[in-house]
Image (tube, rainbow, N blue to C red; front, side, top):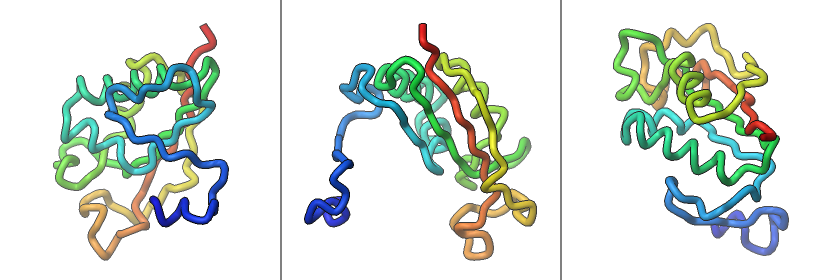
Length: 141
């Protein structure tokens, strides 16, 4: 990250390092984006920690702020934890339980050739997994 921020290459980016359950930000962000990592918070750290992480993001967002979530599609009956995937329905459930409203979903990153059986780092599917994309909003009130 230091290399990417060197020489004022990204002047609108501020590196902020914090514990995931307490970002230390209160209604300061317009947007938060989770790219291909939400599954880890659920499977590695458990449902409660995933909800604490989402609550921390919710606190950091301004009212009306947007949470974007993109992750690798998992399917029921598979070892999604080992495959580094998550079922879209489970992600929706957790996002809603954390107090967000899902306003939109996109198939922009869908890949029907991914049968969801391979780990996302497998060369046969690496960087070409079937992924979901949600736009969730922190309610104004």
